[in-house]
Length: 276
Image 1 (spheres, helix red, strand yellow):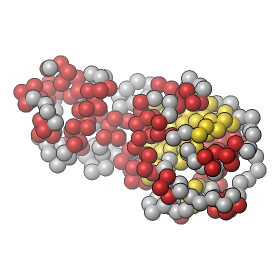
Image 2 (image 1 turned 90 degrees about the vertical axis):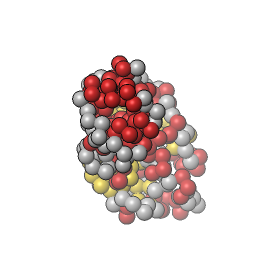
Image 3 (image 1 turned 30 degrees about the vertical axis):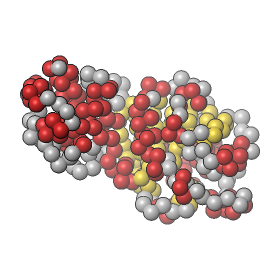
Image 4 (image 1 turned 45 degrees about the vertical axis):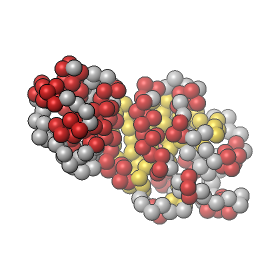
């Protein structure tokens, strides 16, 4: 495909403006786009779902790499531009990336996911990647740098929280590199970063259930300054059963949630299920 003009040029040519309320910050830097494609490394003909295709700069790079691409874009004006390409390996879908059934939209049982995410939709989309993990081979996403730092955080620091615990149970989480805000048009107020989520062959640890694990992690981090025992008690856990479960899991209840590893959260989830 021919090289695309800069985002500002394309918008001007079509009398369009970036929609700030939709988090539209377009990335047209060739070097960064190449690095994103390299991080995904799509095989020729591999089904790939692009979230937030925008003006098509990453779309073009993915097609150049040989991907069989489904490009999702919410903005109907931009959908019309992408539909004009008529590329044999490109399907354009007008939809909100935060509410998609990935496999259904891409018409593929297993696929790779990539995209420059609107910053305000980062967390909902990450949880969609978690929920739909059985159909995802890997995900390479551009998100806020501060969220990328949280994803890659280890236990013990203030950046460690719900996202690295819940996603970390099923994925290997990597922050690959930072993308300066100045490379986007219009430039956001913060830098971005590229992250890669690679599914683990099996979860890091056995849990009682997805629902109970989710509720446990949410409750534990709900009042971060409290001890683990007090946070969970405030969320409704019965003190006697809670003490028993903590002892069974080998966890000191005076610790704070941010000090627990994914495996320790899983052990506590199993113990709580057993003492009920």
